[in-house]
Image: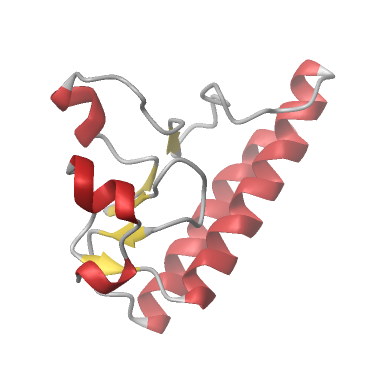
Length: 123
């Protein structure tokens, strides 16, 4: 597990999931975040800098937490359904999952997340 961690995660004990994100999962996360940016722009007419929750029903998002509150630090950066993604400082850096990244499951998760985002586009 530690082979995918960033030095800071190891040195400072930042919470991470039990499974490393392979590059193809990082690509799915990147696409989800890109679609969230579109919804955020449409709603707010400004760029989403990923420092705030975009408010999309069914998707929980929070930026990397720099503080010392262990409860807050333990929260995932991205959650949809039962899948949680964590990263170190920036998305796709030292990223990890709470579940084994099975392709069929991750594709279903991605499609479901995209459906939530599509519904947010309609509002």
